[in-house]
Image 1 (cartoon, rainbow, N blue to C red):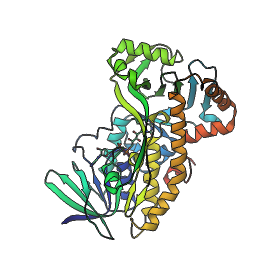
Image 2: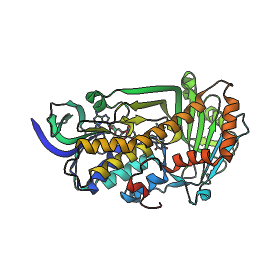
Image 3: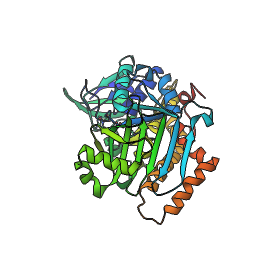
Image 4: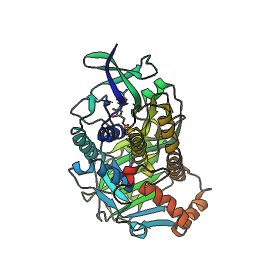
Length: 403
Ligand SMILES: Cc1cc2nc3c(=O)[nH]c(=O)nc-3n(C[C@H](O)[C@H](O)[C@H](O)COP(=O)(O)OP(=O)(O)OC[C@H]3O[C@@H](n4cnc5c(N)ncnc54)[C@H](O)[C@@H]3O)c2cc1C
């Protein structure tokens, strides 16, 4: 028995699902947002990780009224500095060279979650099912997908003309639809923390590649850096067990002295570095967005930026249409997402493999790549395109402020 009917049912109220619900609400679309974590608590994904938002993302989140809800300031990335230990080459990019004040902004995921939640509370066309877990698909018909969920009151079925899988890397919806995904394990573990260094952030984001993995420092607005430190899986337990002093020493050795001495470190969280690529983006009355469609190695800081562009493209296509799940609309969506998805995956994967290849064989090539990128506009364009978030068919909202 179907209990309620909606135009669109989004499974997953994480970064991408919530952004999509807000965008659809602006277009007056009736949305069901199904999220497993309890009301009053942010989903676990809104943790202490630092999110670097590309310029395109900043534009879109401002247009959606989300960034205005942030209670803490964002930190601009004005310069990007990429280097490799043992190599002389380095790449330095300055936003002013590209006529910009900044490539993007850094936001703590937890603060962003609160801003999304505050904006979501203002929507008028979104019905929230929370805590409610996606169980599987019912039989459905030509006009709707039937979605089985379970909440405090038990199991029920809701019908939607379009089902959106925004339920992350281990997407149960993707599984229920029978869409195959290819996965790659980089054999790397990433430690994320807030660090204070002798020199306060000055708007520079650093990527440093070492033999055991990458170390990235993102400027934060609270005079700290957000650090991402990659180690091989074989070393992960040992690094996890290090006390703060030993961990800071390790960071110092991996990163060097560009920001002076590493002084303090906060709580560390740990993530496996994997990537995932769904073979199909759309099926009859169903679409995958965000991490459910593709999960990227975090080193390129592209995952949410790309997922938001999935969501905004879909919202743009659905606006003003009679049937949000029409075949032609969904195949348009898949076509429009192709280039951005492929190029962003290639960018993140290329960067990740560059950092995880331990042998010395590649070193001269990597070094050459760095030096060349410092000089060759085409390689710089590749990096800047990623940093700013304009690839392929760019959703309108991404261009709304600065372009
Ligand atoms: C260390 C780290 C740093 C990162 N840094 C950046 C960065 O700087 N810039 C950037 O753009 N990206 C970054 N990312 C990537 C970014 O975090 C992800 O791309 C983003 O979280 C994907 O959002 P999503 O909504 O698709 O999935 P998620 O955020 O994983 O959300 C999925 C949601 O679905 C819910 N859910 C799952 N299963 C069910 C179910 N059965 N029923 C109901 N609900 C369900 C979950 O509770 C969750 O809320 C980083 C990632 C990591 C790990």
